[in-house]
Image 1 (cartoon, rainbow, N blue to C red):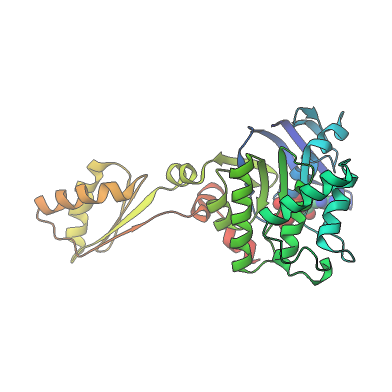
Image 2: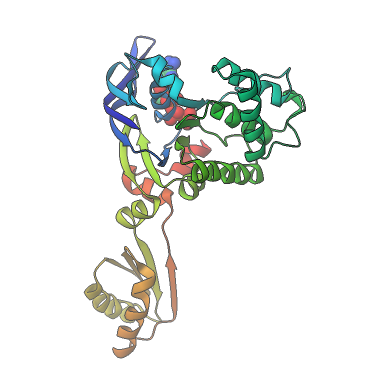
Length: 317
Ligand SMILES: Nc1ncnc2c1ncn2[C@@H]1O[C@H](COP(=O)(O)OP(=O)(O)OP(=O)(O)O)[C@@H](O)[C@H]1O
């Protein structure tokens, strides 16, 4: 559905070159739900804008829905939906009319546009607000209307640039549920950008981590976490000597073992499965454990391991 090779986009700002996207190699298969995750300025939107033909690549190639973005932009555009960061929907029309106009603009007949609009109003939970002026809708409702606009021509591929930025938690969860359902009910391939770690984690089947314009990891959330970070088992003991003895034995189970005072931390891919064996072994060796805690990694831990920086701090900044 998407294939890029060395996709690159530079900008010149005050005679300096900004490498917004550098040499991106990416493949998205039909039906996937992929999130581009990265801090502000990582190059997520620039990538999306190239894939949606809104921006010309400086170099490299991108094929989207079977067509080259550079040589066949019109063919690409006819086969994709794009929901940008701003508001797609106008303000002075009713939501339903806005949708129908959009459908007509994409070449649907009057009847087809109307019935497609009704279908989307239903599936995106807009029935109660579709006849209100767009200007009176809440942020979450408007975002859902934007998504309906992007889907009016039933594209097999939908791009969403930070769909839930600016929404409160409840609206965000609600929107994610709609995105998930659209994806599972219609098999629409979806590519979205986000800097919300939880959103990428819960929504995406696959996460492409982008930093400084480069792809630094690409996998399912679970595999990114187990491969790059793993679980952390923290064991407490009465004395540092007991901790040292325990660390000695724990070494046999693999993983990284660290001792700090009377605490031993073991980093392994599947911590919960190891704990019973570990405790049995320590019990047999008569080393009493006073506390056990297993912490599972977050995507922020993954980002920290990959870049030395926290995505959370970046987002806050
Ligand atoms: N039109 C432009 N002119 C100059 N520089 C640009 C332009 N668009 C993007 N950039 C720069 O390219 C880099 C990547 O920006 P981009 O918007 O793609 O990042 P992003 O990951 O989408 O960030 P955010 O999460 O904040 O939207 C940034 O350094 C940005 O300042």
